[in-house]
Amino acid sequence: MSEGAGSFKYILGWLIAGTRGGETRAKIIEALREQPRNANQLANLLGTDYRNVRHHLEVLQKNNIITSAGDGYGVTYFLTPAMERNYGAFEEILKKVWKK
Image (cartoon, rainbow, N blue to C red; front, side, top):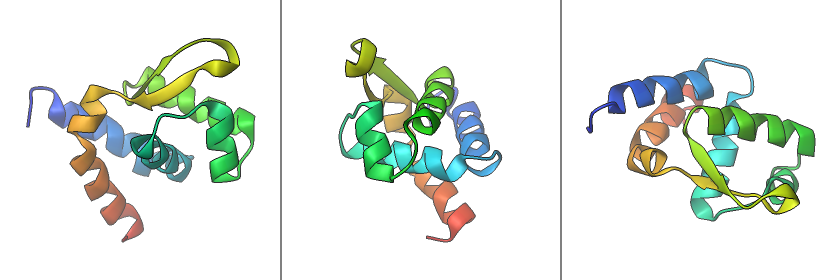
């Protein structure tokens, strides 16, 4: 594990398992791992409200899980390099929380 990976895993666990909305955030992370998407694409894919998706994107971006490129409605979101490196930890969290 790289330096800071323990704290990254802790934050990731808190965002997924320790707070309301963790399941939605997990689905967003999984969707962005498949391919970068904008908020509207994510809302349609997840079958949820656009404003709800925007809220979760802001939380994930604030915590260095995702990043974005572009502006306005064209903003595209994708996983940060730190999240890519720690994707195995994310999968472990999912297994513990939702017994996948």
